[in-house]
Amino acid sequence: ALSAAAPADPDGVRTLKIQNMGTVLTMTVLPSTTISQLLGKLRTEHGVTEGVWLSEPGAVDPLPLDTTVASLHREAELVCRLSFLKLCSGSLDGTVCARDLAARTAPTPYVHSTAQNGGVQCVAATTDYVFSGSLDHSVMRWSLQTGTGTKIHTATAGVMSVWVTTEDLYIASRDGWLERLSQATGQTVSKINAGDGLQGVVVRESRCYGALYTDRSVVCCDFSLDPPEKVFTQQLDFSGFVVTLNRNWLFCGGGDFNSGAIQKLSLGDGQPVCRFEGHTKPVHAMCASATHLFSGAADKTVRCWDLEGRCLRVCSS
Image 1: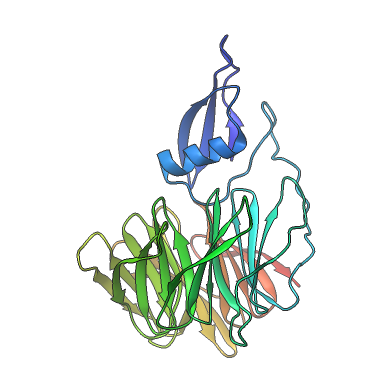
Image 2 (image 1 turned 120 degrees about the vertical axis):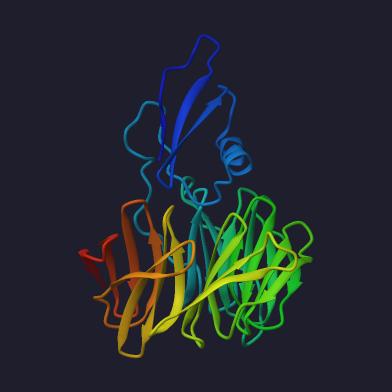
């Protein structure tokens, strides 16, 4: 959430307050500062790489955005991420889309892969680029200015997750390899085999958290060490498919064929805290705020929870 905290001074300089994951950041901007420059400052100075709501000066509500966006893919969308007002999606048809929500334009999809097994499993974005990972083992970087794409890396198996930081790109492959890459070149900086069936990955500072659906566990690896080392591996009683976190807690979602489950864990050592019960099929999508957890599952519902595991609302499709 971004809002004007004070009127502009005589030189037109305005102080902005940005609420990010429960932390309030303060920034000063000039009248000539563009939205792209502001988002760039958030990324370089504060490490904010996720999407933000933008408000008009002095306004209470965010910019009005369309609540429905028509799909531009020919087959099922496998992933959708919001980053800096760009709704980025990847599809089973091997294409990537980056929709500008403020401009409401209909972009031409980027063709990541034409291979039969080339579905785009994961996407991540900065202010300038979209990164996509495919089941055909490739990682692509797309320029949001020109729409051109460059293959920057080939993994050892299908790429299941990508995560972007200020300078690096983390990728998780189906065979368990977790790699830290250079954004600029795609070269491997360091890597570790986290375990079989590595799925969704999130990164906090130098620690990378992932779900292992085959090993039925959650893993944390520390990339500040050379070589990287596992900090913990916590066993689950269900197959994990997705992880997310807030400032204090780690959450792993998943399930088995006719059940869904979410486990809340300690960020430091992975110790279980409580279970979130309610989904009747596996959980495949989650995000967390300082006070709530949101989850989407194969039972065609999205649930809103408090952080003690109580379900507050169910939205069904």
